[in-house]
Amino acid sequence: EVQLVESGGGLVQPGGSLRLSCAASGVTVSSNYMSWVRQAPGKGLEWVSMIYTGGNTYYADSVKGRFTISRHNSNNTLYLQMNSLTPEDTAVYYCARDGGTVTQEGYFDLWGRGTLVTVSS
Amino acid sequence: DIQMTQSPSTLSASVGDRVTITCRASQSISTWLAWYQQKPGKAPKLLIYKASTLESGVPSRFSGSGSGTEFTLTITSLQPDDFAVYYCQQYNSNSLTFGHGTKVEIK
Image 1 (cartoon, chains in turn green, orange):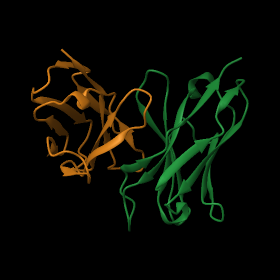
Image 2 (cartoon, helix red, strand yellow):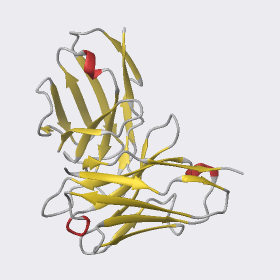
Image 3 (spheres, chains in turn orange, yellow):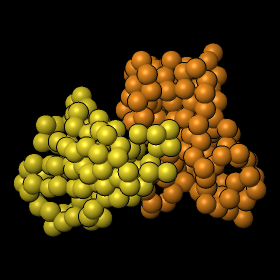
Image 4 (cartoon, chains in turn brown, cyan):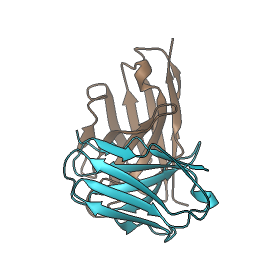
């Protein structure tokens, strides 16, 4: 079965750090363009970061310099390292696969179920 | 960043109705637009990409149109399973942005 499963969410204090993981099955993370998308409680969707097959990375301005996207090819897992967290980072974080097969497209055809990150003292 | 504006924010409709949701981009995005459906507690589901291409497995009552800055998602004959929130998303640039969503609720 093709699926993405996020983990690593939880409660963290402002200024703290957290690393999210997205374990993929039936899909090879390194062969796909992968993103993190978040959704604050009761709010809309916000793209956070993307990693290209070649390793280039891109970030939303709201997280640039604080978040780092990476992947581990041998265990087929996508990561999001989040530092200097603020309450505004509270959200469900989804990992998502780009719909492009040869080149990056920019839309998402496969999503995980998400993991909740709560930043609060 | 390209801003995406959806209207209406909420839409009340009955089963069998024809429903249209509009999405406007702050600058031209050609046809680099996708539509998603999201139900409570679930991840978004891709419905349409490249403005009008139906994702595999999505019912044909969903259709998309538009180019440039104005786009529409149409649901012909609304079904009980279609009550959800719908988002548009532009992918014209590497800074991807979503609309704020349109909630389709039961009238």
